[in-house]
Image (cartoon, helix red, strand yellow):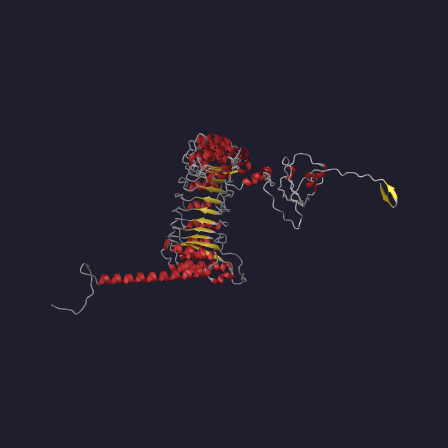
Length: 613
């Protein structure tokens, strides 16, 4: 009974329900953010007290304000470490009091790797090298399945590690990852020959889009197995395989209808008759490399190339069987109809963009006249080693190739400055980027200076073993600076970092001296170039000077022009001192010849008075 305002009232005391320590602990937890992985650590259903805590089934940051030690139940870990305290009054702050060893419990750590999704695990493993993936595959069965996931082996390029791992491991890699491989590169893997695992590895690769077997020593049955099991092949490289023959070509024509690029160079057991079958059956073929292949002088293969007219890249270097008649059939066909007005055969223009006829020694100016007007899209032409070509043939060809960017005339010894002048005045002068004139001993300053002046896009000029002199180097230094920073354009300080704009090769040129080389070095390290675009000239000269030139270029590229200038001055002093020493030695040697001892037989200088007996 309780008196309230002088009135007796009955009161009934109700006892609050008793809660466990675990429930009281969970009730004091504050949730700040989420982590979806913690929901997996407690498989039992939540209690009513924890409904609010596990509403989103996540927690990542907690706040504790306990005054007596508490530990979570060992049978249901929460996935985080709990800070336990002793029964001491709270003195402010969030610091915890030390816990005796008898009260401490070992923290429970979750396996974060297993918590990651499979896609994330594969993405992490993709950062490893193939050799490291093989090592990781031995950890467990799960890791083995992850390390040989198809996403990690879609591109199998063994050129970087084939000589660092045993042959059995390399075969195992190809066998396990074969169904997932799209791009296979086994270039130079010579250790795979005569291995019993090779057949299984070849049978495992069934979804290839590109395959490179260059330099391998595979048997013919292995090569045919790879070709026949991959009908979607778009690029195939079997260059250098001695076992590849015309039978291989027939198999390619039947099994690979989608082929776009084929390289059969240096296949000694193959000739042009097999290649003819591939061109006829593979309608998507755009690139053909068949260097050192025989029997191209027959009208059949060249007539097939003419009828197809889909090849854009054609490399027939070192094919001794190619002559003027074969080139005429390739661009004009057999017995073409002649236009009465132009007196030229009526034939559609070829789609060739890259043509390589280097070392075809039987070609003459007539072949160039056949190409004139028939290859308007030609960008790269390689004629190195065709020693019978003269200026008249290029005079007919150059005006018709307005898109030419790369021209190789190495060892064409009959060419003179007339060809260079025609090239500089032709329609391709603005687009020319690479010119190879090495060992053209009749070319000199007149043609080279005109090329440098009229070809602003030139990036590489090789003229070693020619008659050029220091005048070409001076003209190159002036032309590069003028074309990259015209006088009317305002200076742009610090526009970009230095880079190489022109590469010159002038070693073994008797008329190139060290003062000309010094002009290039001085131009590269010129301090006034800092207000313009810092474009440099890279020089390859006499081997005795090349080390100094390379070191000078390194210093200029990293922006240390003062150090480069000091190096240039020191080198000039050394060269002048060497010349003085050489001249002094020549004078002393000449004096010794005149004033030699008794053993010297020759003219002597008289000394003292004459004595007449």
